[in-house]
Image (cartoon, rainbow, N blue to C red; front, side):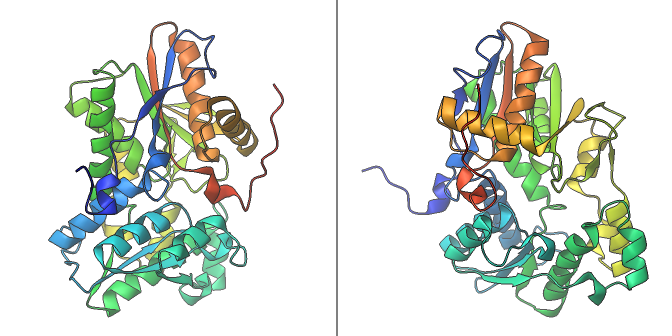
Length: 357
């Protein structure tokens, strides 16, 4: 007999696929890690399982341990919520998610519906006016208008943890278990390519995945010619890019969040160092690229219709930049990126139109 005892055992060890049509004329090999095949449909499953395991050990920023009848809290309107909800359902924990007010669409958001299928409590984040004056919101949001809303959700989570003894806020942005989980993905890629990796990269986002991949390969003695970060235009990312392509030293970590966090009293975000800060300080990535929503969407369509990969826009952005890197590195090189999630979570916002070849 060959079976598993928990859905969590199906997390990770995803296939590595060599693209056959996209990039076939560039000479270099483009490989994609099929993380959308994880049980909840995204790469976040690795992180979710790792963070909950860490919480069970009490390996959290404030050393709070998740009890058997505990509740896991997180702020998310993306892939983190369904991933955590799935793991909590499998392990018997309660889950509560604070969804970003500015991203919600009257309950029609696909990711919200996927999350609710696992049975967690879901709430919309507080209005920033609960924590900040109108004047503070106006001043702090000039550079990044959505930040007061994002951090209001984080503040809601902090208050839940502060006021509820059995509640643990896992907070992926600062959680080293996020980083450690992605190092496991790096080890899998290393084994799948026998260490022959010339370039690797993916969406920068909050830094956990990209940092884990780069550092994980470094620990295995692999130092690719290029590491690259991808920032889809309009996505929630903690890096600031002054132009479409930036070398190391030209992109910086935004300090707007720390200013808002301090004004709100979001203690962890003031006293602790985020994963993306640690990533940049460690010298990753070599380059960062800004990708338009339209270009990302068109490449996602190509991946679906040419390669049969049922993926979303973030994966399209990753492959678009991997293709550009492959062109630069030339024949025989191996370029690796990540298919981060399934397309089903974008059905409420992205049409299925055919691209024009």
